[in-house]
Structures are given as structure tokens and as C-alpha cells.
Image (cartoon, rainbow, N blue to C red; front, top):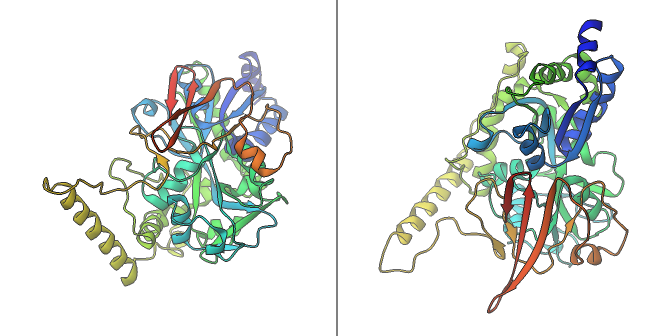
Length: 423
């Protein structure tokens, strides 16, 4: 170990860049343990998924992190290694009286059908929906993949933040706020309330058992062609060994290798969620769940098998398929007005790029900066309605408004390295 440690130190620090979710739950404490073990330093550059993957592809980082699997040809050359399971949680302000929503209500909130907290048993006031503005953000992609069947689903979320850390700050100041983050990020935050889904509260134990339905994998990403590929692989192995597992559990994460039952139940879980909301998985976004490197005993896997769909769930899925077929038939009829078989939610600006997150059409769009940006406490309305000036290396966001006959359209663009994203 001493010899290998000296090699790592001589090669200089490893640079990790990526999703703030992975930085907080996985990399932060692991970097300290790695250095304490004599393996050298890790430079942690926490921002978002797009900046991390772009830097890894260009050789500006040795590792990246994300809460979603690889998507698209541009990421095909990278190696995505799942290291942990994390709950995807819905949050609101700690004082909000709403404690539980159904899966259908979750779907309808993001689709723009439910817009008032009164419809969820709360106060008679509007729901301020927050989302991460980053294209292909891991948490947002994973949630939309679960609830809508495709990670690039447009949603009615006009309040945009560059990552989950800033989103959490915004909702912590807005009594009407609503958004998604992870269990590892929200646990212990007294300014936030995690909302139960279908009566099940998110926790480390309910995620591990599969009782809480919204969970995703956290990945460390490496580039096989990187000069430090061997060192990066050693760090991934360090995360998944005994000491690394203990650090993951301290952040309410389940080590990936300990989640064999979740792997076996994953396909059934996704089918049940989509059936319950009448949605259908996108054929253009195939998803496979890798088996853990250290599989659990067969008896443990058999103890939590994937539950088959109930008659009601099968009927709901059949009805949804029938509706899509009917809509497609109408759209193909030249004598009638063409309608989309997949209507977009109200007030949403769509995009055709599967890696770009769509943004709601609103004059209230604000982008709150990365962790380095200064955030002053102001009334919630001021935060979500007032643009914030900030420096955003390595990605720069800007908003421009173009008046239309009846709608004011807001365009959000982001540049990360050589990529340019617009939503």
C-alpha cells in the first residue's frame, strides 16, 4: 500500500467534478479518507452533471459523478460505475402542512395539472415548483424517468436552480416551494420537510427495503483513455470496500453492492409506477440496472422478489396504451387537426434534444448560482423573481426574454466547456 500511495502522490491530485449530490453523499468524506490513507489528495469540484461529464471527456477531470446512467452517444466512451442507492425525495418548506402526496399527484404537479396546495390538503395558495436547470441533471432525469417514462420529459417548473444544493436553499426560504432532491442531501435539514409518497416516508431503511418507490443509483464515472485511469479506478474500488461502505451509510446511502434485492425488483417497480399514473416508458431511453459486483446470496434476493402487476395496474396500463393509440390515429388523419400523442404540460417550452432539460415558459425564471455564489436571504418571491448576478465557471447561464403576441417566452442557455445547451 505504501508503494502505491507514493505513486498516487507523485502523480498529483485526482480531480473530481460533477453532481453536487454525489459530492455531498459520496466524494466529500471519501476524499478525506483517501488522503488519510496516504493515497494523495482529491480535488473536489462540485457543480453539476453536465460540467463534470464534459470535463471528464475533455481530460480536464479524472473522475465525474452523477445520479443518472449514461445517456446518448457522447457518453458511450465513459465508464459509469454505480456505487450507491439514494432516495429521490420531494421537499417543501418545513412549515408547510402537507405531509403526503400520491404518485398520481406527483405526476400532475410536474405536469401542471395541480397548481394549488389546497388540492393536496394544504393552504389555498399556489405551488412554486422548483427544478434544476442543468441539462441532463441526474436527480431531475431520474425522477422524470420514473414518473413519466423518459428522463427528458418537459415539466411545469419555472423556478430554476443550477443544482440541488441551491434548490434546497430556495425552498428553505419559500413556504410554497416544492421540488426534488435526494435523501442524502435533505436528511437532517431542519428548514425542509420531506414529503411521503403513497403513505411511505423516505428513509435509509425504506429505500433499502424498496418500500419507498423513488430511488436511484449514484455513479462515479471514469474515462478509460485518461492518463490517470488506473488511479481513478483505484478510487472507485476504495469507495466500494468496507471503509467506503461505512462512509456511504453515514449519509443515508445504501452501498450499491448491498442492494441486490433492489436490482431484482427494479423493472417491476418502474412498471408499477408508470401504470399507476397512466404513463409509458420511452423506447428511445432503454434502461438496464447493473447487477452488483458482490451479489447477495440467492436467498436474500428471493426474500424481496419483484411483485407482479395487479389487475388494476394492468388495466390502467392498457387504458393508457389505448389512449395513445387513439391519439396517434387522430394525428395521422389528414382531415382533422393534427394533435400530439404526447401533449406537453401547460406553460412548458419543449426541446428536441434528449439531453436537454425543458424549461417552463415564464417571465419569473431565475437562476441561482453555484455553491461559490453569494446568496442573500430575501423574501421567497424576491428570490424566484429577481435575476441574480454571479460568476459561473465552468458553465455560464443567461436568460433572455423575447415578447410574443400573447406569451412572453424565456430562453435559458448554458455553456459547459465545448458544449452549448439551451432549454
